[in-house]
Image (cartoon, rainbow, N blue to C red; front, side, top):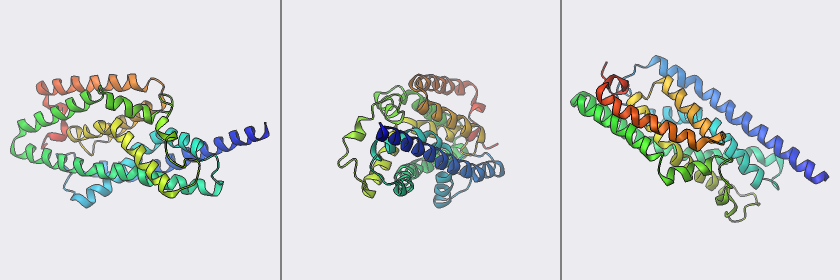
Length: 261
């Protein structure tokens, strides 16, 4: 009984630490994200940023938008895998898992950069084609959410939708291993990308610097990952994206990120 109570107390302590760390990092990341959004004009593409500067901005933006939604999964992971981990190592494990997780989102910034560059080229060279490009992004993002892959990835990101069987298959799961923590972070990053990557792509037609859409996407992703009806929410949002993609054909101004202003 005493061991059970102590284990529960340790689990609560770990959960609290995870939420404090991730939400604090996200809050700090929102400061430069908001500043950048307010200072830079909403124009097509990467707002003049080259690849290095864009990836730096993208990394900060991902910390702001994604970490609160990752807290439940990381808490679950540490509660299952960290029972025999000394308390002094918990912070180290959080840092290692986050490193692997954020690496995936940083790499995802590469195709986003090139797609944004393409959208800018089309906006200048063929404005009507730019609108079609934006419509295609919205349509693909919406349709993808109805695929089995998206549903599976979301289930792996929401502790209320899955048993997290993929975690328990990991070798030496109850032994502390920096390599395993990095691997787990990468794995969770891939699942998260599979569940939410499409939502990030819609920032291109809506504007990569659109603070409004950043907040909307952040809230949608957070609710998807902490709510027991997250899958239903995903379908509803996806339906809305499909509708917007069709509506944009008649009202191109719905895609401000593809207009020269």
